[in-house]
Image (cartoon, rainbow, N blue to C red; front, side, top):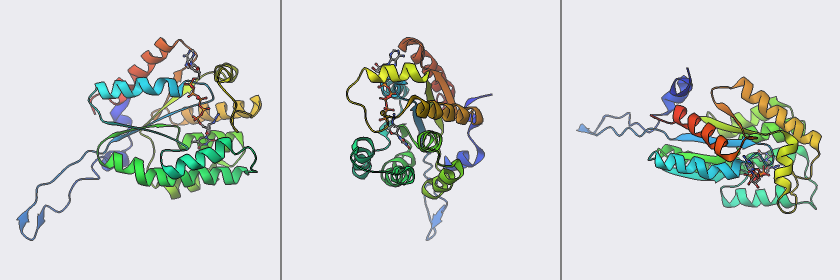
Length: 243
Ligand code: Z5A
């Protein structure tokens, strides 16, 4: 049994966070406005897995279903986030420790949540985000070796109860993904890492998907684009259709 039933109970309650509790104010009846909370969808995967390529397809699918979609990315999504992104991806001359890297990711995330993600969800929109905290577990955790418990502590502090409702994990063997990504321009700070680093990132993503199969759906991204789109379409139909 998949789909709506898999959304945890506390999340279902949060669907109606916008509902007015005060039915009466100074004895005048007040109309109850029930604003369903939006849906938070994230796209994840290793290098060259096809997130950016398929984001357009996901967006179009959701818009065709009549939903208002806010597309954003991490690190990024706000002015501060984009500056942090520039430092983290292109600051090759800087020494950035694993801990600083993780804290910068979360600093950008705090701003992103406050200014973009929460307001959009509260307005009932769908937020479609290219990478989120699963990437921190995969890259700073699996890749750089920061213990997952330390990431989880900061995750709770920065995000409160905010977690993605659905995560599409684009899965492609490391070397094939790197080959695809390598067809592009100059490598950034992450792209310069070793195959072993990306193997740990890949393994961490798969372990997370195995431990949360309801939220994280693995898309076999080694297939043709047409087949990848078919897989995405059937997950979206199941999870988002009817909500
Ligand atoms: N990062 C982190 O460390 N911690 C965090 O908390 C967060 C992020 C949030 C920036 O991410 C970096 O930030 C990222 C992790 C780190 N670093 N890395 N590596 P990003 O998402 O902006 O950058 P990226 O991961 O490098 O994205 P990418 O390489 O562009 O991957 P992609 O978006 O998944 O791939 P793509 O551009 O869609 O596709 C790559 C090529 O493959 C392209 O030519 C496509 O036409 C082709 N492609 C795609 N799908 C197919 C199929 N099915 N068949 C054939 N060819 C295909």
